Image (tube, rainbow, N blue to C red; front, side, top):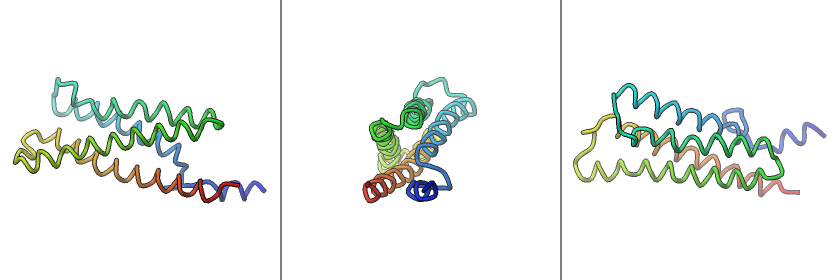
Length: 136
């Protein structure tokens, strides 16, 4: 019986989507802090990945802590994942306008948010599809 429950849980990179969300949130927090330090930026915008990582950490933790509200908290996590992805799309604007990589660290952060946000969204969608298919 326990093996059945384990087999019905969506995993990516050998971890649950809640833990992946938590790790991704910590990654974003660290990224914003490290990039701000390395680039010597005094702008609050260099911390945007960190600001977006905090809600991921909070709501992922809440989803793990309160399993009865997991669905609600993970939907909130996905909304922040979408915001991260959309924020990364701003790189396309700088590319089209011919300003790409004039601010190297900002553009690298945008590309990181674009790619990791897309991957994260795809995994969340796969998780939701898996959950819907495995409802009892």
